[in-house]
Image (cartoon, rainbow, N blue to C red):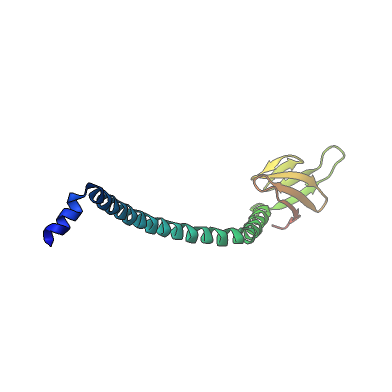
Length: 145
């Protein structure tokens, strides 16, 4: 009986080739199935990443609004004038050119004092512009200091 089966398998060349072909097909299907499983895992990872990107992109307008608000706050802080460390002692207004006495030195309009430009000299105050921030400040007269 055993010889009959061996003869059947190996004696008939067509059947032997068919058996070997079937084994190769089974092997190919096994390899393909493993590759399909690996590909599906990769697709699942990509899908999760895509969902995270979509969630993040939905928040982009909200984040842009927040960044814009923070930029406005920074600009507002930059526009705040620096503390003035000098005292305005007196103002001389004449027909030619108004002059101001600051820390015992005389300055005219468009002169620079400690990083501030004298924009306008008034009878009781001086308008200064900070050269670094561009902020404009009016300094009152303090003759008693």
